[in-house]
Length: 144
Image (cartoon, rainbow, N blue to C red; front, side):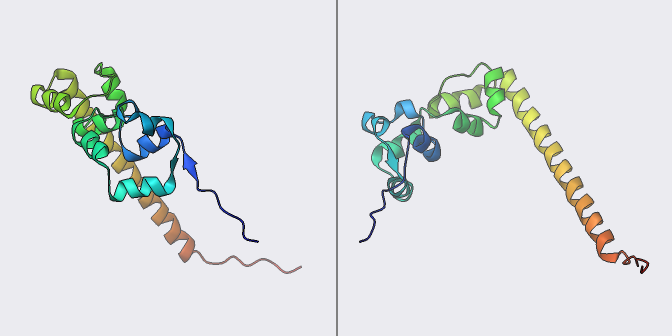
């Protein structure tokens, strides 16, 4: 007898997150039913019309909005953006460039520079430590 495997499924919220779409803007059928890994893979490779439209026009979830604006999710909150935005609204914000957006974008650039500098320092430290270990002379232990 062969055992039948049940397909792994995920909650609609998880699937929406993996697809990069705002759950509340998805069709009711998507929101009501679990999504299998096979369905998710199929939608990634050959997205249905509703998914193509959502990705193009929104509304977009906060991580996508933050990425499109070039700020962090926390920066969105500091700027007062708490709701999902459409592509049109994002484009309007980019065109208007309010002070908070300019400040958050430059802040994110600085944070990323610092993170890169720290990663490089840590890599150099590891490399230096590895070199010392390779070139260290083995210590002889006295025999008893």
